[in-house]
Length: 74
Image 1 (cartoon, helix red, strand yellow):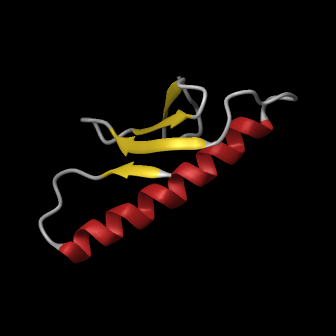
Image 2: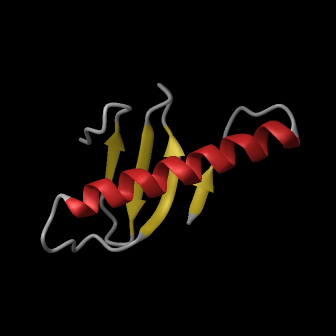
């Protein structure tokens, strides 16, 4: 999984944000995939937080979604 981390000031902060991003991305991916009988989007290709801090995940299919804290995606 490629991660995009912006705005960190220290290496420690970068590592913390990266770990959080990876954990949240995997959780969102599993929840999203479970909602479909036939998941055709593939695995996580890239994950990042948008300008509002919302998790975004792009899959190997090229499609990507925003994932809100309440578990919804769009």
